[in-house]
Length: 177
Image 1 (cartoon, rainbow, N blue to C red):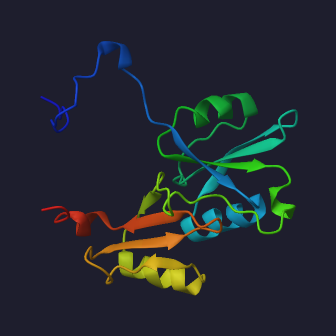
Image 2 (image 1 turned 90 degrees about the vertical axis):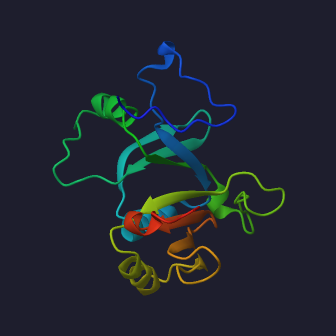
C-alpha cells in the first residue's frame, strides 16, 4: 500500500475528484526583476522556463525552476506554457511595472508584523558548501546553520527580503523529534 499521508485532526481523505491535482508554483512579487533574476539564477541555479507579459495590466511573470541538464523543455512557447504549468516546485516572480523606479518601495516579506507568508525552501546536497557559496556571493543570512536552536537549517534573504530556508535532506532526519 502506498503512503497515505500522516493523519492529524482536520485531515480528510482526498476525494477522487482531486486525483491528478498537483501543487505547481509559489508567487513572490519583486521590485526589480533584473536583480531578482540574477539572484535566483546565479545563487540558486534556477532557469527561467517562461516569461509572460501582460501590458494591459502592466505586469510580467517569470517562471523559474531548477532543471537537470537532461530535461527536455519544449522550444515552442505555447507548449512551454503547458510544460511550465505541469511542473512541481516552480517559483513565479511577479513584477508590477514601475516598482523598480520607486525609491523606498518594498514588499512585505511576511515575517514582520503582521506575520503571514513565511518563506520558500531549497534543499541542497551539502549545507556547509552552500553556506560558503552564499558567503562568496554576498548573500545576506537571517540565520546560519550553526545558530539558534534549530541546527543544520539556514535562512538567507533574497533581494526583496523574502526568507529562503536552506536544508540538507540527510541532516533533517532528527528535526521535530
